[in-house]
Image (cartoon, rainbow over all chains, first blue to last red; front, side, top):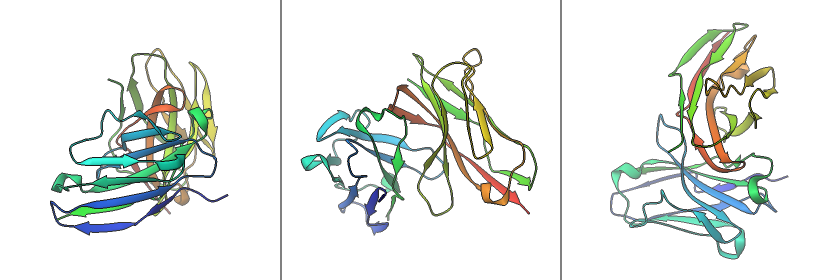
Amino acid sequence: EAGVAQSPRYKIIEKRQSVAFWCNPISGHATLYWYQQILGQGPKLLIQFQNNGVVDDSQLPKDRFSAERLKGVDSTLKIQPAKLEDSAVYLCASSQSGGNTGELFFGEGSRLTVL
Amino acid sequence: GDSVTQMEGPVTLSEEAFLTINCTYTATGYPSLFWYVQYPGEGLQLLLKATKADDKGSNKGFEATYRKETTSFHLEKGSVQVSDSAVYFCALSEHYGQNFVFGPGTRLSVLP
């Protein structure tokens, strides 16, 4: 079974530029999450989708971050314009519908460096 | 809001030593509790879980017991191996499978 796929693995940009990250969840997983993990900290939820609807985006900085999950499958997270403090690893995770098992399956992450 | 506190690392042990990584939580309700592990170069993966008080989660020789009275979920292993070197994250979910909150992680290094 293929795992959660993310790209790109690494991205370096200058502040005020834009960047987009892509995630393809495990086939059949209805719930998709984007987390931000700053060095030395635990993952922080940015947004959670159930199919193509948003369940929770309360911690998403909506003035610069946006995310979509068209057709309820893969998802894109965009940052525009980027700030220095956005340097982090962006993790995508998926789970079965409603997270019945309580288990999230994570991708390897996309590491962003903002200069 | 909900939060998870873990003992600060890094933790360095010799092979076959006993491991404890402390985790305490704050939650308004009755959460499910999890330990996730991140091996070098890999994504986070579930290690074990417990969904109600006094439940013990176990996997790969690791154990953790849900202690509601002390709001704790400490991770233990009787004899660590070099291959256990990783970052360990304690996490909770107020609504089983939803709204995960992660602790800051504890890095474990096991020396041969």
